[in-house]
Each structure stands twice: as C-alpha cells, then as structure tokens.
Length: 219
Image 1 (cartoon, rainbow, N blue to C red):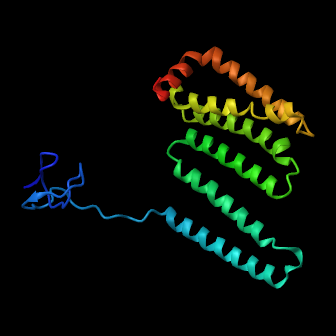
Image 2: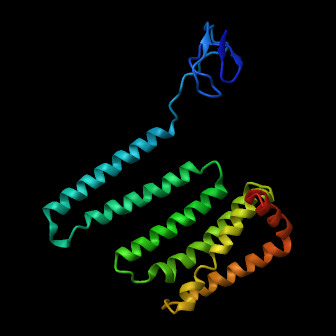
Image 3: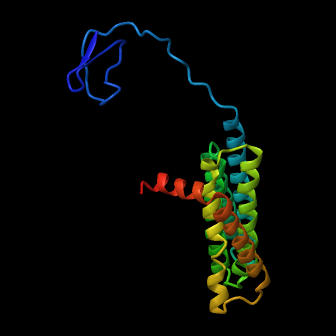
C-alpha cells in the first residue's frame, strides 16, 4: 500500500502522487480498485470544430477579396472583429451554461462592453447608448425572470442576479442627466421599468434578497 508522509494517509492503487497534496508517495503500488474510465469525446465538440472551420474559411475569403479589391478600405478587419465578438459571446454562454442566471449577467456585461467598443471604434454615433443598451437591459431582466419561472428556481438561485440586472437598468440615467442622448425615450422606459422591478423586489422579496446579499457577500 502507498503512503503519503505529508498527509499521513494510506492510499490504495498505483497512483504516483497524493491526490490531496500532489506530493510523492512511498510504498508498494497495488492494483487499482476501480476501473479506469476512458475519456469520451463530447458530441458538441464536432459542432464547435465545424463552426471554427467555417469561421476560418470566411475570414480567408474576406481577406483575399479585400486584398484584391482594397478600394473600400480594410473592411476585412470589421468582419474579423465581428466574428471574434460572436465567438466571445458563445464562449461565455458555453462556459456558464450550468448556471443560466450567471450566464445572463455575464452576457449582459459582455454585450454592453462590445456595443460600446463598436460604437467608439466606428466614430461613436451614439447608437449604443441611445438604443442598444436601453433596449438590451430590460430584455435581460425579463430573461432572468422568465428563466427563473420556467426552471422553477428557488429565490436564492436567482434573486441576486435579477437584482444586478435591475441595478444595471439605472445606468442609462448617467448619459440622460449629462445630456449625451439625442433619443431619450428608450432610456426613460428602461429606467422606469427598472424602478418598477426594484420596488417589486424590495416589497415582495426584500428579506430574501437581503439574506442572499449577506450570504454571498459574507457580511
């Protein structure tokens, strides 16, 4: 039997390192008590690889066409940036797929950042803060509420994420008060809708939300 001096435990099997401290073990290896499970390739990896191959084909074709006909500028870079943005969002959704609430919040942050960057890099026409963000935030708020209802989640599983999305709904108040908007109606609707949601959370789920904040914040 194997023995780890650092942890002071006996180990069965033929492992070379202690599973607790990853240190070297001494003693005589034995036959593994459990069969070794073979790693099976997950079926969705084929879809990911196919999508990656299609992405590379599209980039190659666009780069070749843009190089042969450069009169319109280097529009190939916008295609590459758009595909990179799409892969970033897909990666976030895939990594957070086990927690839909967290995935929605992460997507809200990522999409907001990408929209602002795209608007900035294209001359900042203001479409990001006038239309996209004020419309995106309420959609994400409704997505959290709908997912919680469909999945029948407990309040502790969705209240904090819904609260974060509700607070994000007041961000359009900053450019509104600064006079940076030329179309105020989407932002006003977003802020009003967020205020209604916030009052609903405080009045009907205030104690549960406060308990969740204390639990997750270790307060």
